[in-house]
Length: 369
Image (cartoon, rainbow, N blue to C red; front, side):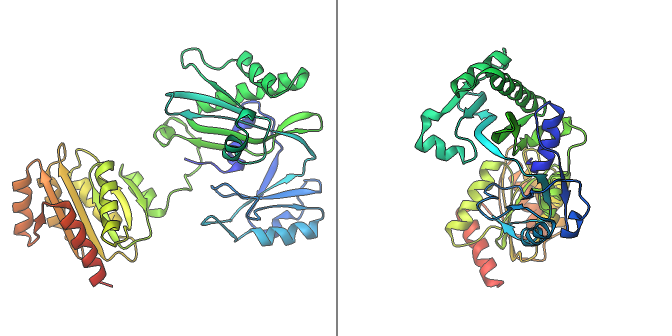
């Protein structure tokens, strides 16, 4: 779950990380009367990176210029996301810029602290061009991350005196954010020198979706489409895509391979939907209802390999409410014969070969165009 910059900064501030207060607006006229000194910065609030390069961050020296630039940013599209809100903050005279983050190193199976004296640009570019400028510290999960660890990293960046102590306090606060908020990424880029002190100019926070239930008061997940949010409310894993072949399967690996098969035969998947292991008749009925709500769907491909999931349960859901669009069912595994009998009684023939089923689904979608 990604948070907007202003949402992440609110959390960072609670952990003692210095941020500059700002105001979120949705219309240019809301700039009138704001108690923020000029010059100020208008920052697009979207859940993607590269806002500055795309023109989503602008400096304004006067109220008239601020309204003009706010009108330019609001409504623009950045990497597929429409800008609907701006964060308005006082401009800062930035000196040195640093990068600081905690993220999950899956290969090492632990969190890693990453810092660099080359802040303000993509850390991936720094890693490729000048890897020696990056300092890393893998965090022992039994020992944690302590201020002395942060001071060691700060010294490696060339910091000393009060700035080293400031860096250590910020890094330790960011560690607490990452662990206590169950974050996959907690990032400050840049962490800048402003008026002689370190200040978090930007903030990024990505919270593990599986841990959101542990944190009351989190904002609504704006990454999800309406269909994805509906599926999540039913404990179904769904990702909406831009094709016309709706897909339902059980198990993430099977669903991914189903998407690949549809694409291989020239089709375009409309979604990824995993009913999971042990899916019931009710789960399957909910899944069908969700994927068929998407406009432009011309065919449905149900690909079930029954293990814990019983084929007869899946078949009952399909037979009870056959879709209005052409459908292909591939059904094998637990209680396969019972499932086939239920479908045959409803006039639905189930295939066993996944490739043949995928090819037929693509042909049905093409024929419905």
